[in-house]
Amino acid sequence: MKFAIILVMILSVPSLAATKPLVFAHYYTWYGTPWGEAGGWHQWAKKDRVGSLSPKPYDPDVILFPPAIRDISSSVYPLVGPYDSMNRDIVRWHIRLAKAAGLDALSVDWWGPASWQKPPGWTCDVFKKVVLPIAEEEHFKVFLFDETAQFADFESVKKWTVQYLKEFKDSPAYLRIEGKPVWAVYQLWEGKLTAAQGRELIEQTEKEVGPVYWIVDRMRARMGEQGLELYAPDDWLAIPQIRVIMGYAMFSTWRMHEYKEIAPVYKGFAEMVHKAGKKVMLPIHPGHDNRKIAEKKPYEMPRRNGQTLKDFWRAATEAGADMIGITSWNEWPESTVIEPALIWADPYQYLKIVAGFQGRKFVAPPFPPAKSLDPAMQEYLLGKP
View 1 (tube, rainbow, N blue to C red):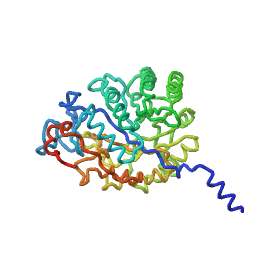
View 2: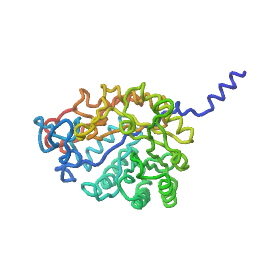
View 3: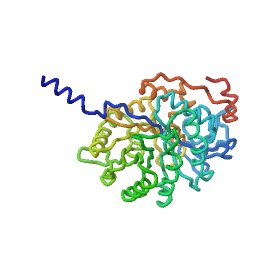
């Protein structure tokens, strides 16, 4: 009888670890091509930068391997070749791939209407004109991952957060959790947004917009008494409106990629965040390789034929992650992608791994129309599955 009572009590307590985490992938919309609406190379070229893999800058106008492989600023190569983020066919293909892999949403990198982008305000326009409308058509969820606090003045950050939440929150494609529109804040660099400013941003936004589901990147590393530990600053944990503490990348926090290293620090971080009454989003990576854009101190996280992604996923789920953030869908210059790539024997390898963890059999959607591809790739890829 006592055993039965204890069993009922255990089964009545919600288990974070037993709940399947929501899975997102960070999606970048900053790409431009000469044949697309951007009218020039953006992010595919680093003509002012020399990486450790070459003594000269990278120039996509150069065909390195005829007939189609360009000299782009990535150590891997997109299956569809370099693309323009305003290309509706490519964005639709990306969203259908994400659905096929079982992702719950795409976390879309966001820079507001910033004039420093090329073209000015590019990611804002791409989201408004292409990503959000196509997500609506495809019945898929997206939300914004706001980088502006690191690059813009604080008054602009507050203004833009209110303005664009008002504009996007009621779209059927904009992700809501607990009935609230999701807004994620990227804060890798210290000193760019204080906890006091975070409170002000949240309070002003909710005063004008209503309740928001706040996700904030505050995962940090330090050496504790037991060795390396991940933590979130107490002043951020104390902000009641923040629902989720996340980390964007282990390669920016502390460099490791094997399960035996990752598991204990993820477990400790999740316990700290949960103890503060918040949920946790842990980052997972397929790999990282910035050698084509970083001349000094480049870093390569080996993919190990998919094992790195599997190790991160295992460590995150065992730690009781409420959410998983895949870094990334398509950050090509850092080569952290799960988007299909020509360099792998199976271009869809990483999407198949994700689908497997999500309990799905991955079935690739139709390839984008040839007319939407890099002109140098069209003949090469025409008729490919």
